[in-house]
Amino acid sequence: PNVRNLRLSYSVYLGGLHAMDGVVSFTRSGGSYKIDLKTGTQGLLRSIAPWDAEVVSHGRIRQAVLRPTGSKVLTYWKEKPNSVSFVFSGNTIKATFTPPEGDSKNEPVPPELKRGSLDPLSGVLQIIANTTYNNECQQTVPIYDGHRRFDLTLNDSGTEELDGEDYSVFTGTAQRCIVDFKMLAGSRKDREGSHFWQDGTDNNNRNRWGNSSRPPVYIFLGKVRDDLPELPVRAETSTVFGAIMVHLTKVEGGKGPTLIIPK
Image (cartoon, rainbow, N blue to C red; front, side):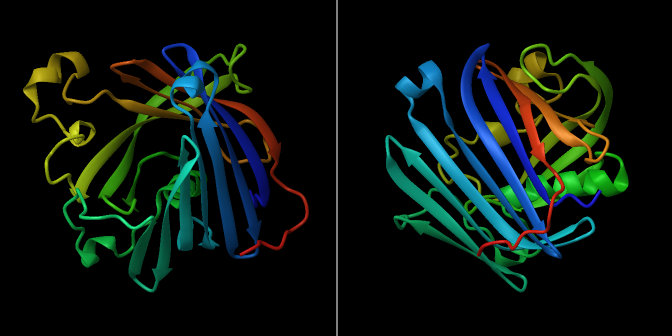
């Protein structure tokens, strides 16, 4: 479907508590796209950890192929702003941090590994585009987040009947995809904070998570409306603080007149 103007709302629950809300807006005009994510902590978590973020990405799109031209991630921690901007030029990607970073805590990412990579938000849109055109979740998307270069791989994990109840607008059969994150470059120099990227080589946690030292991440794709492609309707994983559940709570637009995308 030629989706032009779409707005999706999501709620995130941590250990059963409402932790975050987010809104994703997608606009398309001809071969250009813009995608915008606004999110922040909510409720009790906000009183402990007041955090907000806005992510904007734009570029060119042709069928299932995205070519981002720019992206910006702006975060606020206790109202203190930090940002990273991406500029895509040919096969090169330049990331600029504001305020400027000192000595990086991550190993450098070679230029050849950046080529063809997407920013994280465009990467999510690429997953949806691939699923729409190929009608399956089997795919690998290259991501560069300013520090790390990793592959995000989805594999088919069957289907599941979801009951939205009071959490989600979606009820029905959803395609379940299991997500794998493979670090290619940009690991932390001191190895601290890198447990998420560990694989099955860590034997200590294998009994808990099966073949991997980290819990599985699942994304569920479902048809919310006949005139829309399959959309992420739910995501889930486990953490030491409890289960994380992401639910689609509202769908607006999807069609309408072609808009001029602001720069």
